[in-house]
Amino acid sequence: MEVGWVLPVAWVGLGAVIVVSSIRAGSSPRAYRVGVLSVSALWVLAGAAVNGYFLARGDDYSGFADGASTSYVQDTWESLVVPHHTTFIGLLIAFEAVVGLLVLVEGPVRQVALVLLIGFTVALVPFGWGYLVWSVPMTLALVLLFRAGRVHRRTHGTAVDLTAPPPGALP
Image 1 (cartoon, helix red, strand yellow):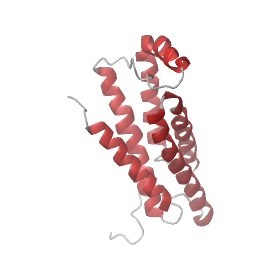
Image 2 (cartoon, helix red, strand yellow; image 1 turned 180 degrees about the vertical axis):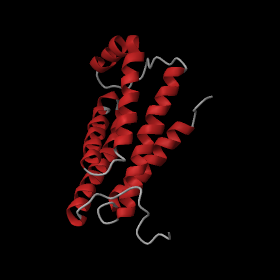
Image 3 (cartoon, helix red, strand yellow; image 1 turned 120 degrees about the vertical axis):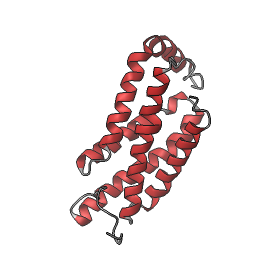
């Protein structure tokens, strides 16, 4: 199976939903819910599952850091990660899956998961301009979702429950 165009479309599509939802999340519990669910889908499906597939088919991730602006990042990636890609990518998969699922847990757990995802997204910047273009809007969107979660807790006394139907939905 070849992922070809599907992976970039999934990342851009989910990324767009996250950004748009995050802009409205402070005033709309529904937008907040959609944003959080999309964050989970991005990291669990388009992150952990896809990296698991790549690892299972034998990809060694050589060349991933070729777009980095410094030789330090490129050389470190090729000399440290590539020879031990099973371990490092395995840890990446575990991180993406766990944090992508933890973002579904309302309250402080979700807030910690969002902070971890913000850190992860910022950590991609040294890998090249393409990651900078991705990281800036995604970091801002994750910060807005984090802030919206705090606002909803402060104004309503509870976090937005992702399992409850949206307000006004038919039973």
